[in-house]
Structures are given as C-alpha cells and as structure tokens.
Length: 298
Image 1 (cartoon, helix red, strand yellow):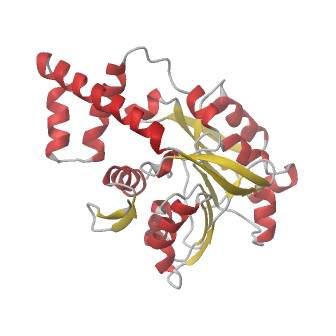
Image 2 (tube, helix red, strand yellow):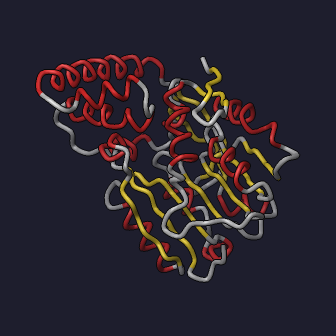
C-alpha cells in the first residue's frame, strides 16, 4: 500500500515504497538529471511531462520555476491518484494541469502492465523494455548493479555503507552477491503474481496540444517505459517547431536511441544521447536523449 515518505530535503511524498521515492527524488532534485547538455528553462516556461508518475518532476518544477505552466500526463489510474495527492495542492501556486491519459501514435485504449509496488515501471510496451535488456548470463551481475546503486539511492545510510563495503573484497563480496541474487529471484517470483493488466486511455501528442491550446512547449519530458517512439510518432511534421526542447528516457532496442537522435537532428535539433549512470539502468539498456533547437532561447 502507498504511504508517505520524508525525503532528505524535508519533502514529503506519497509513493508505493521508500525506494521509489528516494530514486526519483535523487534523479530530480539532487542530480537534476533532465537539465544537462544545455537543457534549461525560463521562469515562465511551458512544460509537458509525459509519464508523470507520482509527480516528482512537477514538484521540482514548482519549487524552481514557480511561474511555469506544467501539464502532467499519467495514464495509470492508481498512479494518477498518487500524482494528484502529491502535486494537486500546488494549484494556485503554479499553473498546474493534471491529465489521466497517456500518449501514443494513435488514440484509443491500450493495456498497461502495472506492478503496484513499482509504479514507475508501468508499461504498455513490455516487449521493448524486455528487448532492450543486456544479455546478462549470471544473476550476480544484477546483484552487483543493485549494490552499486544503493549508495546513490540511500546516501550515508547504513545500508549504503554495508553495500559499498561488501563490494570491496573476497568472502564478504561473494556472500553479499549471493544474498542479493536470492532476494532478486524471490522478488521476481512475487512480481509475477503482483503485475496487473490495466486498460488506459491514450491520445496523440498533436491532439493533446490542440485540445489544451498549447502553442509552444519549452520542454517535453518523456519517461514512458518503452513507448517513447510512439509518443514522438504522435507529432506530425507541422507541429515540430512548437517543441523547443526534449528530454526522453530511451530503451535502446535495435539502435532506437540513435534512430531518435537522427530523427531529431533532421528536424533542427541539437541532439545527444547519454548512457544512464545507474548501474541497473545500464543493464536494462536505458539511455537518455537530450535535444534542443539551436534557435531556442532559455
């Protein structure tokens, strides 16, 4: 069941678990993961957050750009409830719009695979998510990645200190990897029983912009667990000039990251990709795409 969690800077959020709250907070507030490679915003920027999840990015925007307008899209109803609980109270402080809808190449209804204990992994393209994974032949690789990421997730904690120490040598390292491998296997089995199929409404990005009368987007943030290409395919050629900057998490299956980078470059963007720093994300084949129009002013 979701609960409230207090984060290192005093922010309190509703989340499925502390791990998810900590990871998202570190990405948004500590590492400012979406503001690299020249990505920046004016105080009165227009932001569209596709795959808003529990709202951590919106909380960051509200704190740092209080004059901004932000549209947050989250298709999964249970996650949308958490989004509303976390950011809904900011209405009146910031120009905030919440939408219980996802984006795709075509409008309609699609099936999402949802793990209630890991809301940010919900996906309508599990084939892409699974297909982008690195070919890992031993569970110890996943276990090592988890241990490497713990100090970033829970900096300064005893758990993080124990993980760092365990990776340093011999028997302790082998014992830790074995233990985490067993825990991962147990969780994988439990996950099979937790995952639910949820029907969610989706629409095209171009239709969303027209419906909401959004003439220009200063930042389009996309984090949709494998459906990033479908989101971008929902934007016809005539609408591309309206999008000034894009940051997208990409599951790099069949060269998708380079495909998207080339697509954006032909449309007038300076576009670069950057592999994820999280060890687990690297095994999942996730990279981040940053794109901004050479003529955009921030």
